[in-house]
Image 1 (cartoon, helix red, strand yellow):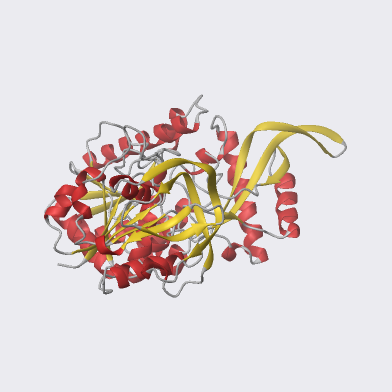
Image 2: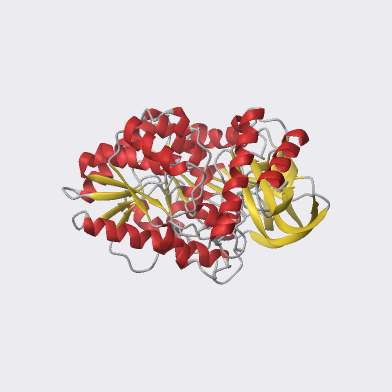
Length: 513
């Protein structure tokens, strides 16, 4: 039985990021909910350490997420991050207060050289804070090991009890030496040895699908993107020709996309693929709908109805395999956590209907986008597929703010193609994680050929990211943007203005809806 680190999820947007950082160290990691701790501890012989995540609530609230005291026995090292640190302080009779000086974003912290967590770390580092409460009075037996420039306790520990707490988020890239601090806990405090690899993940995923489907058949929702392609390849390894991949052409695909997906799925990967033209059905179900959440939910339900219909036609298939990844899950508030906030309902997670005739299997549910790409490389999926830009399942429908119509679909499709072609010609496409065009629900006055126009506004969006949980806008040179703008206003009927989105995630999301 492999040794592991357990992360207890208190609702932080970054919980899975903690697990991901540890997996990058080749250590097996599991995420559990607070009410699962007792059962977890009953079989704790291979647990080398426990990490308490952050969370949006205050530990002083009556309904704040709780956890079993059994974990604080001293036998297993415990690290509390943000909310987790405050929970430790509360249990050991310290005092947690609402901060007089709330700290969000970059904060300077001074660390103690005596703490094992700060081994090989400079005394002064910049960290990422996100908290409204802080520890005012330390519990008996605990010592402060780091302090912010505002005098707030940034870290404490009780080596005798094998317990450590950090107020800042070591799991995000914005914290200097955050990975090193986490490594110090994993290897020096917990004594772990690297023995888990993504090849193990593939083996486990294949075995789980075999165990679930047994001698039955499954359909796989294939969009042609990285996630669904990797999911299909894993499923293909598990059940072979008993897998039927289905590409639903909902009418919201990019220019020429359906044809290219058919070619490389069948010819290069040998996937058993069926293409269904359901464009009229999807357009009809969105008639008159302008709310983004309602769009996603209707699209999600329509996808399921098409898959159910095709599964029945193919011989009453009971299983549906999806390429859901963790950023889909966390933004849809569908991770199993009772405290996380919903950002938007991804069509394949929060957009699923309550009643379905298919049982969902999601082999990639715990991975981030970059991890999925690494799994795909291990599976020998061609680079042109692995490096394909992310494309949302609802497609162009969520890049049209307001009602989706045939006219607006064509506007976005043409504008998007021009933007991508311009980036390709200038050499910028390979430097961008994701780029696309958005049609705004407003018109503006313009002039073309000495005549007044009243046309649509198109927004261009290009971002750089690693895992999709955070992103920064791409600083494309003005001459490249000018060329894209000129082509769009000249070639796309009905558009007379182009703007460029220079907003990071957060505060924005990558997609506009």
